[in-house]
Amino acid sequence: AGAGKGGGGTKDAAVAGEPVHFQSGAAQELAQALVASGLPGVGAQTAASAACACRAWRSIFTPAVVCAAGLKDGSAWPFVRGRALSAMSKLGQKADAGAMVEFFLCDNYYRREAADALLKLEDLALNAMSGHMQKIAEMAILRNEDANFTASACRLLGAFARGERIPNAIAAMKGWLSDEFKGKDDMHPSMREYSYAPCILSAVAFAFDKLRGQAGSGVQQIPTTADLLGHNRAIVRSGVCEYLGSEYCVSAIVTRHCDSLLSLAVDDADSNVRRNACKALTSCDLDAVAAHEVIATWVSRLDDDEDQDVRCEACEALSRCGQRVANHAGAVDSIVAHLADVDNDVRDYVLEAMGTFAAYIRDAHYHDSILPLLTDDDPSERETACKALLMLGERSKPYAVAHAEDIWPQLEEWDDDFLIISVCEVVEKMLSDSDSVTPARVRAVADLLSYDDGYLGWDVRFQALCTLQAFGKHHMSQDIVDAIVACMEHGAQSSFTNVWNGTEWKRSSILHDYSGVRRQACVTLSSLGEGWRVPASVANEVLSSVRSNESERAAAQQVLRAHEEAQTEAR
Image (tube, rainbow, N blue to C red; front, side, top):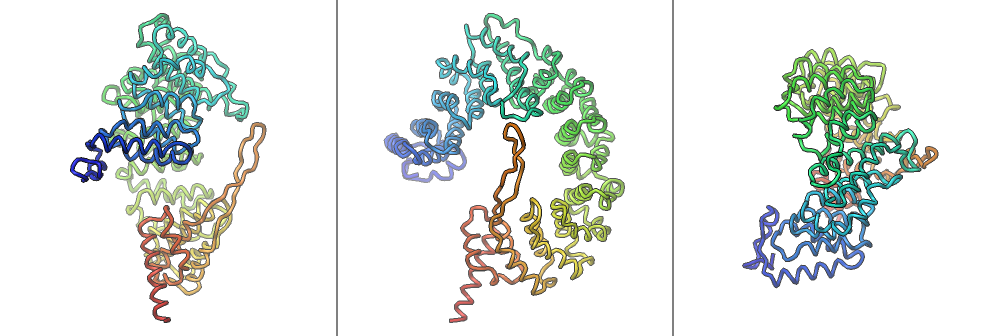
């Protein structure tokens, strides 16, 4: 700010992203100082962070130099180089495309992001890429390599190949159409084909679209997108549909192929093709096609498709289209009916969609679809019912109160973490001020503070604290307050997950930090007038933690004031 004309007044302008004019001498000194501080080693964090701050100052002297310092310093932490790349990508025509190309060729963490940034620079990147096209062409045909890296090279090759390089680029792309896609050696066999191939084939379809726009030998022999959608290999059709549904494809191209996508979504024998076709249809311009046919296709896939991933994609597609879907006869009814879907993932997507269509959920949906699930034999169905009540907010409260006797007993089902958390949240938000609250039920919630089973033990304790806070002071007994104080003693704990190591599944340990429980305990005790029970060490931890929110910090400050007052009174 001191380098600006007039000696300051630049903070607000910088935040707003407006140009800030620097005196050339001061700007040059700043740029040189930043570069010097960024090389070598950890000092690159300074340069990269400064680059992020400087990206709004469009007239700063050679801002790309600052970003390049972060990109080129291989000894800096990966996230530092990632921030520098993000800053560089926002500089537009002032970016150092050469540094970004070198970054793409060498970095092992942010190669895809670097490729995407180069695609946006267009002609500026074309000049910087000219001396590296052979290397990129070699990367675009790598087998048994990270699929995202190879796909990024394919996109760059298609976008920037010119002249004599076009035939070789076309040959490289066509080679992938017949590839066996065995995947990396350490990839689980069942995952190789459909996690490795569509990513690359999507990039190939993008490259073909770009190459068709060039003048050169062999361009006429490039298969069209329509040809690829009708390819005899399902894996190719899936990859092209993935491209049409991605950020790399414009809506006009997708709209042009709407009829083919509708057909694939319903009739293709391969579930991955149907799923990706459903997703691609969301990118169509619904004003330029028969929107009712598209919506009807999504509804039919949700209702009739045997594959759960297709049903998930169809449900998500419906939720994206808001009012159009609400106006489509039977669409919302179909969505709500799938609260009873046999697949957990489908039910989760249905819950998200219900949030979109909350205004169109009829009372009959509560009675026919949601409330019966509260007494279902399957715990996951009961969890879904609780989440549905929460998703629909205040409107659900009368129904929750009316069925309180179906909800409260489920707090005792300690063998299902997810169900307990959902039930506890319903109690907090819908039953905590109702006549159904009794001392025994408050005690049942307090008992959850000792819950330490399963994968989500700390989540259960956290939600129990929130619920006890909602009950208020008049429901608290001394032993419950003591239990809240005791739960702050939890430190870190390990749980386990399974990881594929190339030949078999291995158990791997994951460490969880329970500082969130201590922060919420601080808030809960403060709200109950028992803040003095929080140790000063916990209050200081809450104040110093970057994870603490405003209410948590306010509670911690109140705790420390209570300690100071107690010490003063003692003296």
